[in-house]
Length: 122
Image (tube, rainbow, N blue to C red):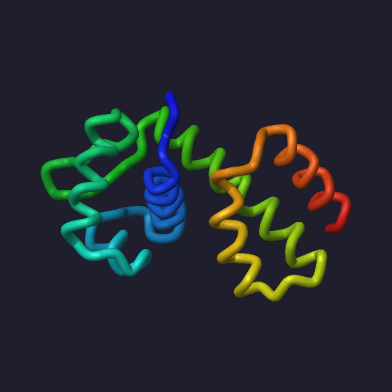
């Protein structure tokens, strides 16, 4: 299933927040991303309908198996690209922004090369 870039960003945010705090609610996503609560609510509904997350009666959000897989894939891309850019001399702030953009558009072949370069640089 093809997951849009915005959904990938939400999944990555949920993954990182769950690792950091253990529990994730829509408000946490809104605070972390700077998106409005209504925007987050729409995204959460779409992710739930796509069976990428589950929301319990108390509003706590967890990733499904397919959600975890997608979130970890995008986070791996982000981390490798970020590391590669920083190793190449890009500032951490610019690397974070650029990695977030690049993670969605590069091919698997290009990502594998960047991943190798990032690993070799560290």
